[in-house]
Image (cartoon, rainbow, N blue to C red; front, side, top):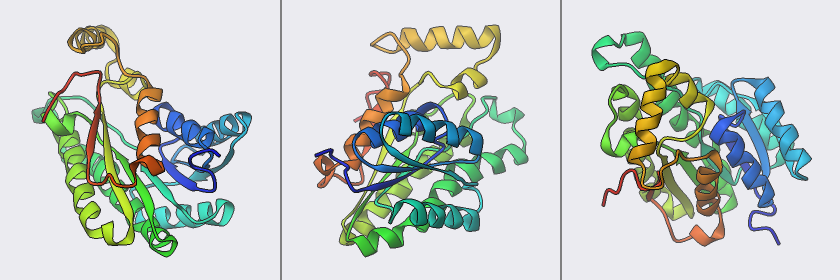
Length: 254
């Protein structure tokens, strides 16, 4: 039997990049997957890929910055696929620039997507998990949360907040047999990374990243998806409140 057979997963930001890899991996492991994204066409693309692999998927439009919209998306997923057993908070956004050049509007957008969004999602799914007698929540943070990152001050603050928020939920919700864990990717080959490192200077940044990673390569979305699949599985039933770096050894913080 597949390890996630009979489970329903709600994956945000699943229209591309890491989110698409996570959705496809969870589906291969047997889960029915709600492919949630603000870009509905991209969500349909992932759902089609999941079905082509033989899995079950439903594309769902969601704006995680709005709690009511998040609740509505979860309700749609529940109606189409069943009660939510697994939540993956993957959706995120960033713009790399020095903090002195930031605007309050940028701060607000970063916080709304990267911090408030996962908070909204956790609250929207937890009643399902309590009713089921358990569940798995995995949030995608960043190694920037653990060690900081030049040009990503507010983004790093949000991602660090996700780590602390998840550890607190892990303590509060253990009584409901809900596991809450965090995966922190290092530099990963995604469209978002390409976007924030565009141009000649960006190419130098990517080259420097590769040289600083012991494995001498960027991460790939499937590297992150494997870690998420582990946390979502029964193999992680006694693991909660943990933060796992998937960075090829770029950061090794105790």
